[in-house]
Structures are given as C-alpha cells and as structure tokens.
Length: 453
Image (tube, rainbow, N blue to C red; front, side):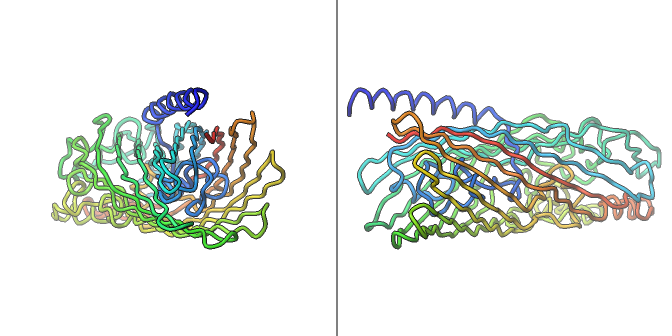
C-alpha cells in the first residue's frame, strides 16, 4: 500500500471516529415509515429509500449486508437537516376545558450518517454502518387544559394528557452494524450484520395515568434511561444480468434489555424490542444511463408488545386486570400494526459530472383511529414521501458529493379519545374527551461526502 493511500485511509478513520461520536450524541427525530427512516444513506434517501439491490455506497449494514462485496473500498459521511411539524387537537369534549390544540416545540434536528467498506479479497468484504431510528421526540408545552380528578371532581390545570408540565417523549435507537459479505459464486453474494443496538428513552408529563400503571413511580419524568441489545441482519444480492439485479434482506427482532426507569410504561416491565423486518427488491438498468429501483418492505411493529398492544387494554386495567395495565405482562401499548412499505427510485446519469435521482415511498399507517390518544406523543402517521437527489464527482481522486431532499405532506388520524371510556367507567361522564386528531408533515435536506479508495 502506498504512503498516500495509507494517509488517506488514516484520515478516513479519523473522520469515521468523529461521525460515530456525532451519531451517538445526536437526537434521532425520524418518524417516516412508522419510526424507521424512509431510507439509509444519502443516495437511498434521494431514491425513495429503494436500496436493497444497490451497490454504490457503504450502508450495507442498514440496507443489505450482501452489498459490500460489490462496493469496493469506500467511505461515506453525511448529515441531514430534518424538520417535522406535528401536533394534536381535541374537540367536542363533554368536559369542555379538555378541548384545545398543541404543537410540538421541537422542530429542527441534525442527523449524521456513516458507512465504511473494505475489500479483503475480491470475493470478501468487511464494513461498518452506523444509523439510527427514532420516535421523533415531541415537546408539547403544558398549556391550560382543564382536567378533572375522576374521584373528587375537582379541576386542575394540566397538559393535553392531564399530566403536569411539558408532555412528550424522546426515543433514540442507535444501531452499530459491522458487516461481512462474501461472493459465493460469480455475481451472487450473501452477507451478515450483527445489529448492536443502544436505546435511549425519556418520557415527561404522563403522571395522570399513574393509576393505570403497575409501577407508577416508573411511569414519567425520570430522565433518560438506556437499554442495550443485539439482533442480526442477513442478505442476498444477485446480478442476474447486466440489466437486472435482485436483493433481499431480513432483520430479526432485536431483543433489548428493559428500561428500568420506565417499567411502568412499557409492557413486560419495561420491554421495548426493535421489530423484525424484511425487504425484497430489484434494480433495473434499461440503458447505461438509467436505473430503476423497486423495493417492498414489511415492518412487524405489531410483534413487539409495547408497540403493538392495543391502548384499550388500559380499560381492562381499570377493571382490575393488572396484567393489562401499563407495564404489565400484557400491558397496554401504542396499538401500532404491521406495515407494508413500497419504494421506487429512478436514477439518471446526465453526464460524467452529474447524476440525478428521484423517488417515491408509500407506507401503511401504523396508527389506527382507536389508538390516537397514546400516539399524541408519537404521531408517526405520514405515509407518502417524495424525494430528489444528485451526485457530483469532484477532485479527481474518487471523491463525490451527494445531496438529497424529502417532502412528506401532512397526514392526520382522528379518533375517539381514550378519556371517553375512562371517565364513563370511573365517573359516569359520557364523551368526556370528545374526538382527538394527530397530524404530521416532514421536510429533509441532506448532504454527504463519499470517497472510493
């Protein structure tokens, strides 16, 4: 290896360390395909997230670990500016002071990205991808909602869910994915990535639901808590011909340690695993200038009790079924269902100095109308994502800059307030909370530097 190449890789390693530190320190605010990002890697972000059969960046640990053997020696560093606009409103409540609207105060986030790939042999590659998921941390001011004590009838001022102080949550999932890819026969590879995961969670302003928790002192306002776990992603990529490549990946459920500070929130005494998911897709090359990528992804949110259990289980808790209480062995959750995600991306090489991209991503909505109330703090309801991107080589030494943009138009879900059956059962007040609506829209702009060694 030449001294120039050694110095270049040394600088790349230093940059990688800086990005890893930045990713670990930054909040995650993603909430697109549920709370998964619509894509990983700046090129994927510009193509609607379609990525399972692509081989032009170092994000195999996030997209398909089999990609690495076709990528070559490569480093990708980037950052995105993410701006979600979300809020909630309540109307038609019999207890009129419960009506009102709130908007989250947290509206701007910076999200770094990192990928590295190294060829050990022509048929063997090792790599590292670092990426995040998040619950789009929310921060609603208390406001002046008039909340009744269900036992005494006296009113007090609270936030939208009748707790004290600001209402909101902060969920960060940082995934470190070392990757190995092997070309088993010419043009066909397999890969594996352990998914080493760290979660951080904080919840504020949910004190009103303490009577429905198995551990009311571990429900709200306990600061940051952390959990750790591991899963695995496996993948396949095949170049069937010069005109078509196919790919597939499957990620197991990531089994996490429990949140001890919030064992009164999440089912199974603080459990919050990452859901399993799989993707299949193809990349078509009708001409040397055009590429079309198509992906189908399925995310099994409903298989994680804390995410998928119905919020209506809170009512069973009120009836004396402790296992259905918040934090119980079958505790109430956010009611998220499994989702299907369809991604399509187009790439056009305009000339050697400019490649253009566009894409569309459509996701099922994980949140149903009967589960609106708990999702006021996590309104991951957008479904349609429109994307653009470009890449421009520069410097003549394998360097390139890639930019991407995403717009997700506003989507809302409306449903009957969970306060309705709660107050009907405890105080005989019908339609106490009326109807609630949550909404979300998103903008993202990102830029990344990539280098082939």
